Image 1: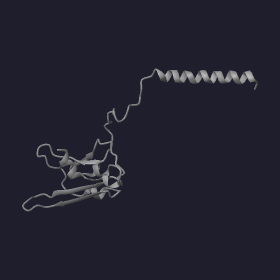
Image 2 (image 1 turned 90 degrees about the vertical axis):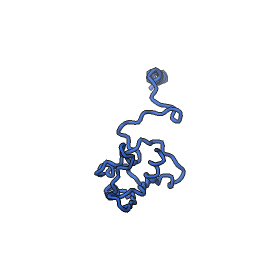
Image 3 (image 1 turned 90 degrees about the horizontal axis):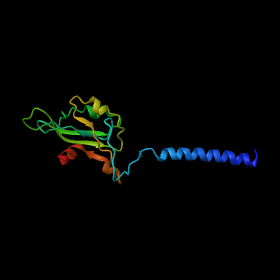
Image 4 (image 1 turned 180 degrees about the horizontal axis):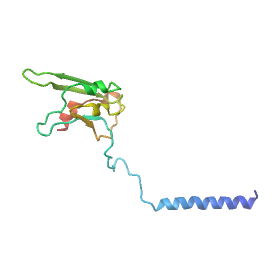
Length: 145
């Protein structure tokens, strides 16, 4: 290829690249300035699980059956419950979630017969140690009230 041929192909390539850049310059921005701006979460977002409370009574819907713990392939859920004297049902004492091993598969949410757990909208999780991702969901739900 001759000297002038290379200059010609280089100029054509430059004009094509400037065309792409110019087209992108006048399109609306897609990115957000993250810590200061946030985007809306999609309805299908899967964060860590959280307990659902009954709106009428304010108690947890969890019936302490343990199916979520049994269905979990990652073994990241552990439930402790007790039966108070004179009560008909078990009371939920702690619901521990080890989010470091959770695969967000959803079998715990799907398998719950009382619809007592759901995925949260909390997407901004950050921490410096693994212990920060061991959640006591009973304690977290009571603190949010």
